[in-house]
Image 1 (cartoon, helix red, strand yellow):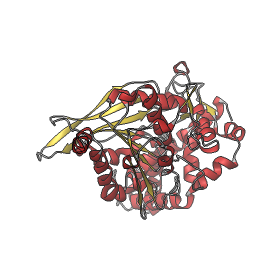
Image 2 (cartoon, helix red, strand yellow):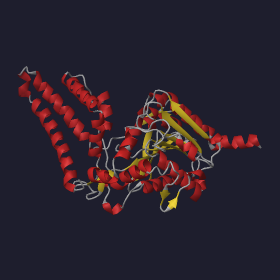
Image 3 (cartoon, one colour):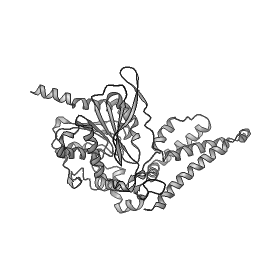
Image 4 (cartoon, one colour):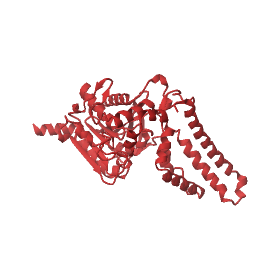
Length: 421
C-alpha cells in the first residue's frame, strides 16, 4: 500500500463523494421540481447536503472559533491567537485575551497527535481561558509538510515539548491529554537533567498510556496482536501529488477515520440517517448538535509514518516509558530525575481507550519525587472524552486541576518554605 496511487485513490474517493453530494443537492433544488409532490426529491436534496458537508470536512482544518470571552469585569474581551514558537511539525499558540491583565497561571495544554487536530481540545481551552494564560501545541498535518523538513518521530516530539517548555519558562504548568502523556513525562524528566530551571511547576497527565500493559484494552490488544511489518505494509502510504508533502510516508487521516468509523459503524450510520431526515423536514441547522460533533470528528490529519510506527513499537509494544528505558537523541531518560515538579494523574473509571491504571503508573516511575508532590484522581462514571472535555471535566476535574496548580505555584511554595522555616 506504500504508493502514491493508493493515497490518491482514497482522495479521489473522498472527492467523488463530495461531488456526488453537491450534485444531488443542486439537482433536487431545481425550481422546476417544486411542483412535483414527491418526497424523494426532498430526501435526495437532504442526502446530498449531508454527504457533501461530511466529505468536505475531511480535508478542512477546523477553526478554533474562540472570538471573545467575558472576564471578571463583566466585559467581553477579544481573544487573539498568537504563535509563540513556530516549527515545521507544530507551533505553540497563545490565546491572548486583549485588555486583560496577565493571569498568574500559565498553562501549557499538550494536544494529542492521534488523527485529529488540536481543535479537539476547543472546549478544554475555553474552560481554562478565563482563569489562566493558555498555550496549546498545534500539530501540523503531515501531508502539508515537505520532505525537506526531515523526519518526525516520538523522539522529535519529545524534543519539541522541551522547546515549548523552555519558551514558557519555569513558572508554568503543563497539562497533557491522552497520547502525549508518556512523552510529556519523558520531556520533563529530560529537562530535569539538562535544564532544571526550565522545568514546569506542575505536570498533569490526563488519560494517557504511561503503562499500557497495566490494564489491557482493545487498543493495547491491537498493538500486541499486529506485527510492525503488518502495520507498515497495511497502514503506511505516500502522500499524493495534490499536497506539499508529496512523497512523504504517512499514516493517512482518511485511513484513520475509516478505522474510527468502523469501530462504531452502527451508531454512526444511525446518526447520519437521522440527520438526513432532520434536514428533509427542515429541522436541522448549520451548527446543530450533529454538525458540531461531526465537523470536528471527520476532520482528520495525516501522521508521519515514523511517528505512528515508533509510538506503537516503543510505547505500546516495548513499553519503554513504563520500564523507564526511553531513549531520546541517544540519551537514556531517567524519570526518577524528576524531583521538584508536582505530578497529578487523572483517569476515567469508564475509559475504554486508556483504562484506569495506565496513567497513574506515572507516579510509581517518579521515584525521586516526594509523596507530597504526587496526586491522582479517578473520576467515577467518566469515559475517555469526558475527563478532558465533557461534563466530568467541567464540574469536577477542572476545579481539582486548578487547585493542584495553585497549591504548587511559586507563591504557594514560597509560603510553605517560609512557614517551614
